[in-house]
Length: 265
Image 1 (tube, helix red, strand yellow):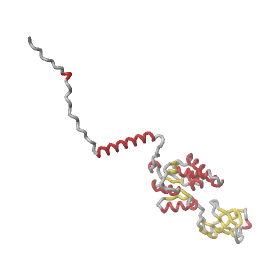
Image 2 (cartoon, rainbow, N blue to C red):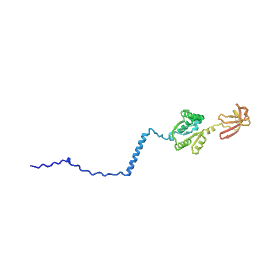
Image 3 (cartoon, rainbow, N blue to C red):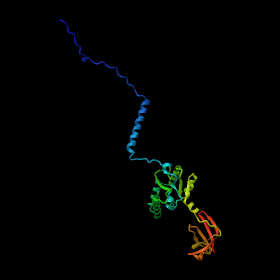
Image 4 (cartoon, rainbow, N blue to C red):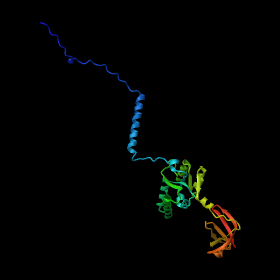
């Protein structure tokens, strides 16, 4: 009788152990790079979640502002003559009104002093008329939010933006005009324009004028030309409220403009 061979059950044999993989410690450079990537991703995620609520306005450039930017200050808005100048067609380009100028005008309009409040409201009215004007198609009005926060004074902010955009500063403020010119900014002063538009008279020229009130001395009478220029008339004291024919005898130049002396014909 043959002996049966023993059958070995391979399933019951224990698995052959595999050698353990060596533990590799990450380098310092790898750890730092990973940390930077994590911070970068977290920052991007934070910007994505906050962007709808905290939008940072895109800074204006000379290209987005438009051609020939003209920076408008508070004094020019309160003065109001800019409306007639714009409607005359003598100004072209882009009138730039900044947000901080609007805020200053609004504060003036809300002032407790009646005179300042009236000036502020007139300035707001001028802004509205400038934005809606259609008489001068060569000029547009643009409201910008750019605010150089590193500069504190409003006038200095205007000069900074005018230099940044290579623009012109429009004002009636003598001191601001002087400071801006000293920094290389081109200035348009409406008062200078008004002086340039004064009537030009020469000695010996004749014209008619109404004497409105008495002068200070020597029986003088005083009248005014259409542009506001004062004319002092000899022996005109007794001709108040009367139109007289006069001849220019002397022209006196003052810081405020010309002063004419005349005698009745």
